Image (cartoon, rainbow, N blue to C red; front, top):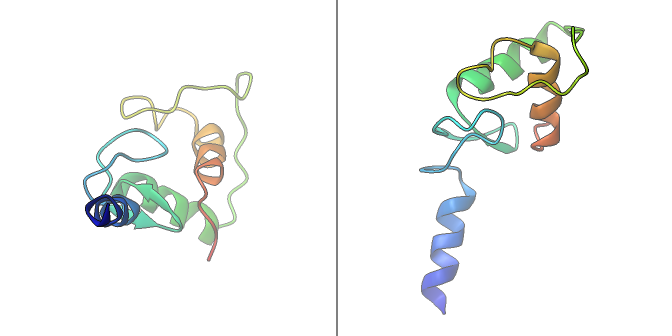
Length: 87
């Protein structure tokens, strides 16, 4: 029905959904993925400064609301996996 299509469009802009990277509340679609302001800013800074991060473990760190700042390598990897692009 047409009502479902409207809902899909609403979900697509990221409002009221969850951050594809850490699961926090998304503030919208940023760089192509639903994300919170924290991950949006992290991605922007990483790209702008061309940061090369390294993972101290096995590149499978948990990236969630509580642990998102523990491994920048895995967080950035998850940003790209979620569909974030440098624009």
